[in-house]
Length: 177
Image 1 (cartoon, rainbow, N blue to C red):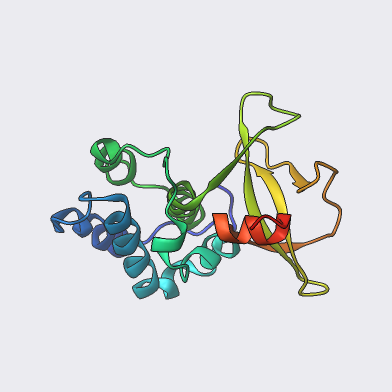
Image 2 (cartoon, rainbow, N blue to C red):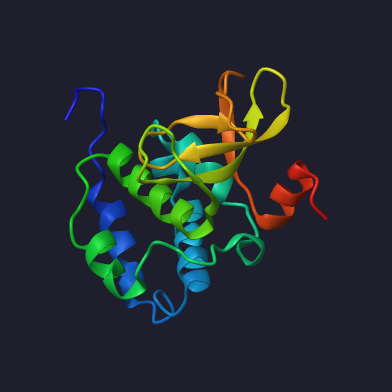
């Protein structure tokens, strides 16, 4: 652990683990998403200074019914072990875990392989360019983080806030009715 990384507060971890007592937690992907988001919002003050907060925060206000992935890469029957058994050392690693989980529930696969990784499919996301506030549909790789414009060219528009994309957003950007 680096000197600048903050240790995860034991209270926050214990409170998070108390979610396990909610009988709806692993009932469905939608319930899992809603319960996690509600908990994150209630504990924002202890999480938002993480370097990964900007990746997590855009997901917190999506309407899950419009964004739920058709094939999440999460197995609900294994989530209790993956999410709740091992306490992360730092707030950053915890926020990254939470963000990765929520993104797995809302990601929209493009059907295109990452040109760098070859073994991971690119996801559609919307990039809100900080310099201009312009929003663009781009492709992003989970594995290596490579970003491409929707036409397959390299993304070079600078720093952006990344938002999930759903089918209607993708169709709008691609001109499909």
